[in-house]
Length: 491
Length: 95
Picture 1 (tube, chains in turn brown, purple):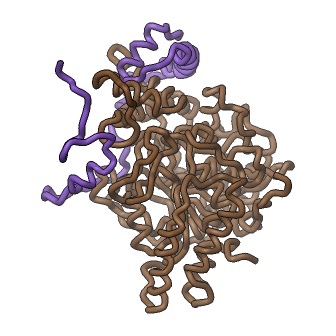
Picture 2 (picture 1 turned 90 degrees about the vertical axis):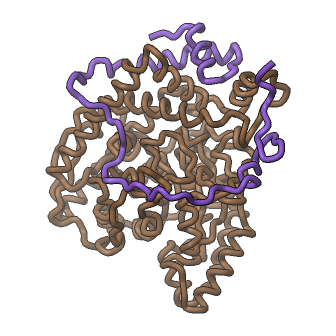
Picture 3 (picture 1 turned 120 degrees about the vertical axis):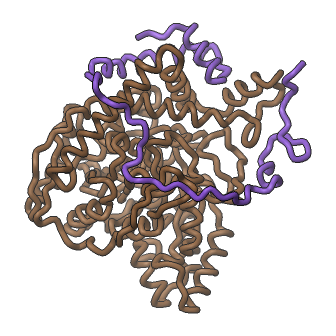
């Protein structure tokens, strides 16, 4: 048993008892990163100095009997979409290469105040646009379970680092499945909270009405503990919800007896991998055995979710990414003649193909003459999608679905076909359009040993119930105790 | 729906992207395919449906309208590609 094999809560107990110090845990993470990250490539940047300084301060607090939080001293990683004061933040894009933020994102500040050493910045698809980590301008991250495959995206670096035990937990962001799909691909737990539950202040924006930060961990209990530190109202984010934060760990072990769990038929459609389907269906039977009532439900507008998403998200992206113009920070094209050329050449050189594709699509959907037909219509269909969810939640407590229609695919397999890549999010993105919370919990492996994830969707602000439903399944299995075989031999 | 090269160039101008001729060709094909895929929304009856104008599911709070310190100029300018004194420098815009 190595220190890095511990869950966040196990490590926290050892820190509390004095059996292990935060400096020891942080060093163990840094050594693990040095050993396995050349294969996994989850990190864009490791901040050893900052993490060790935070660990020393944590140990001093523990010694004085004044820990800052339950997770004081537990080292974690951050998707490189969160602004970190003094530590380069790129969003996986060339346009922000060398950008050193002058302030922390609210969630980064909260983690620092809670005493968690921050190990560094994790790889992602450029501006969180992608489902495989291959649109990162720097390099693709590899799936710890099979290095020839993608860890998913866009929070693929976060998921891979957690699965490879390089970090004890991580933060990701989820706009259309970017926490849950990589969690499903790496045998980890990923939670997208209700829109507004966790502050977006200082999180580089992709699609502002869909983006939501959340925890990525190895167990459900860890996700609850990490969410506990993040979920609070933030006056600096005007969409932050003024809703009280419950104790997310309190009801975790209460089980599912008596709960009504919906199985939306639209999520078991053609095109799903047969092993994924078998694994998820086995999980459904297990929930029945555990005392839940399964209810066949319908979310009829699900079939329009992908089209709706791929109008709304690019429209918001084209607006959000307008700020990268070479004037105030980031890349500036040299030798441009005049201001307009400076803008257009900076953006041409700074953005990769996927970012450009979405900027183009969004600009088109918002342009004169097309706004009503595309953007406005999509916003109306979005209303119907949201109403579908709110209607079924009057009858059932939560929904159970696959997190991804397929197991992790090969790196390079889909890069040249944007539409087939967009289909990877078909089960995760309706949740973002509706704004409701969702999580992915490990639900088994294919014959080839690739992870499968079960998605649990719930009512607004009922993250505690989602965690409880996921925990009821997790404790029946040893999946969270199965470790990716790293470092891989001969790789 | 097929996007013409001319339309692609117009959108690129609006988006301030100096696309290469190869990119113009590629985006014409790829964006046409995406627009074909999203055309299905035209069949949804949305006659009486309100658009989702905001994404929040709970009341949000307005912050007290009190002045608070902003970033000091040296921090705001720390990442500037070019600066003059306490300003961002840009190419000449008036000939």
